[in-house]
Amino acid sequence: MTSELLINFAVQLLGTGAAFFLAYRSFQKRRIQLGAEPTLPQYFIRRSTYWIGIATYCTFMAALYGLLTWLWLPLEPLVTLIVKNLGAGELVNLLNGLDGNTIIPLIAAGLFLFFIAWESRFNPLLILRDSIHDAFAIPTKAVEVYNALISSRLSAVDDSLKAQIGNRLLVPSIDPGDFEKSSATVEYKWAHNCLLFDQMQNYANQSSFRRLFNEPSLKWGEICISYNAMSEKVTVWKEAEPHYTKTVNLIKELDQLTGLLCRLLAALVVFGSASENEIWATVKQLGGNVHEARLKHTYKYVLLFTAATAIGVMLGREISVSLHNAFLFPDQPLAHFDYTTLRWIVYAIAIYVLPIALVFISRTLAFRHQRGQSDRYYGFYMAVMITGFIVSTTVSALILELAYYKGNFSFLESFIQHMRWGILPALMCGFVAYRMDTPVSESEDPGKLIMAAGLRFLGWGSVAVIIMLYATGDLIIQETNLRFTLVGTAFFVVGLLGAAARFKTAK
Image (cartoon, rainbow, N blue to C red):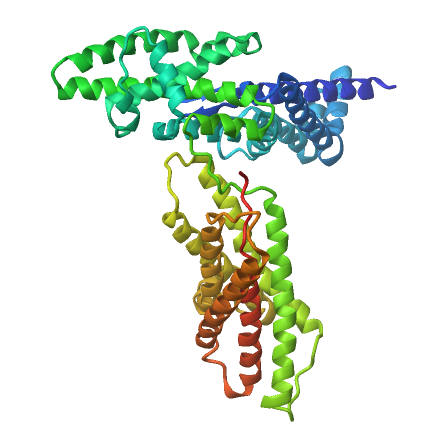
């Protein structure tokens, strides 16, 4: 092995090691935000799994660096140039040899190492880091548990647990009616804190959770001090005359204590639960909102909507063509199943299923950070309808204009012209989001299920006919057959999508 190759290998090894180390540091810097406090995510997963996540990210970054500097933009020409000319003392030739082939790989390698360590939301490598991080550290589940505990309703807590809390207090500072008061009152907030602290005591007595209580960032010592101080303050406040300023200050202190309690308790619940069902059973015991409409295996629903769209296009177009040839224009027959049907399937999936898939993604992100409780989320329904309208109209404009009018293409003009094709997908997105919050029973009668699906099919099919008659109103007389086929196909596509919008939720 020549000296140039040996030095080049050493440089590669050093750079790869630097990439691995910077990736390691970057992965450990990631925090999740529980309320106002950043929290280390390794407390929400077992240590072995967390280290597998670190190893995965670091190895991937090191491999990318190796590919970049060995194959794509190799550093070997620069290393060879430096070794040969420095050894011969020819500095002039070294400077003359620094061109794009030798400088650009060095710049690329330096920028790659910089991006690994650069903490910025605009850094593309951090998106990859956060994805791997989320897959192993389960911060999303911790955020869900935290938000559920913060917004829990004490009226849903078992009466025996309430009595147990009152019996354990050294100073009687809770009345039985405090659990039923408004969540904005001092009495309710203190009762909430007592419930959380009492539940935390069960974990404190187990040695397997000791390292969480010893972790300084989770502030167990500060929680104990603040809890004891709040006990005395609440007792004094109840005995004293009402005072607005003191009440407001006490509420702020209680809210701060609640945040610390929920943060540590979320870590304890997620870390100490053997399964997701056990996590939510604990949360429900504490009056937390479990989000009964959380869906599992959402990809199956996306596949179901895709199949419904494809079947709707095939049935709708073929039945429409049959009716057209038999009754409307028998002397101008249309062709049955051909390549056009396949193109219609692709187009329908793009404008219907893609926005619906975005509804699933948006719903997951919205509920991950949602803290209040509600049976219906009408603001979310309106938001996904607007998003579905924009996405479907954009896709329609791009597909139709680029496929048929490849000359002068103006996106804005095309978007305005194709806005009518985004109405039905937008309505369907809102309906799908609404149906996600309508849980169905596993024991529901099959006859009722079929009847409900049939009614949804007819209802949405009728809506599709009305809107498509409006959308195709400007077609010329020679295109009447196309209008009839479009309306008939939309009837089956939208009808089947409406019928398929039935969700089984995770209990």
